[in-house]
Length: 310
Image (cartoon, rainbow, N blue to C red; front, side):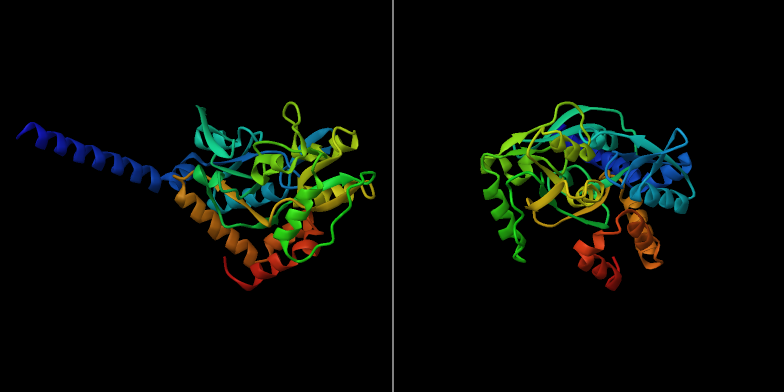
């Protein structure tokens, strides 16, 4: 056998071996979790998706996503484990590789330990994230709004019914204004070309949580802040008459559960579970429990879910 033929044969064998290994990992992802007996839920405390409540001096984990993933674990016949994370490291804990969105592009970082099987904490579907993770069917509507203190001279816009036009109007209003934002999250100013508007973008120091954005503007850290739908609804209830929604900074968005790209069976199992709890009313009951006012703003989204199978 000539050297070239031998090299080609070895190359074919290597490709076949790698394909076999990849297929094995691809096919055994869900089975591995069942054999381990634990489903590991990566979560960032946020709004009512993942939160802690104080019960007699003890913190209890609660939230829409906590209940959904616990139910999913039960459906698989495994126990539930919560893995705490921050916005800047949650994808790394899932995929084993840190990532960041800088300069309007994905930047790959260091390899890190893989700590969980899925991410669920109101994760917004963003284009750059789809390069490194897969999403389940969407299950919650979202979008990013500009929110200001009531003493701000910024005036809420009158919605026109054209979301793109409304976004453009709001962006013209923030020139020279202080806007609090947060990188690595759905409030990343780079996602919405906020720097191009002439806004004075303020990024928080340290690991501030998304639910700390409104308290920050209440303390005059900035005049206004980016805030997504879920957190805005909670903030309006918590600080009635103290904040106002100016208008949208993004077009409509959706949230979903995030999976590694080599977890197709786990994702498929979750999609099946999500479909089931939507059909039997469990999902709707949970949404009403944690976000009762969401129907006022996004009733059409939930009507579509009731009309169609996922």
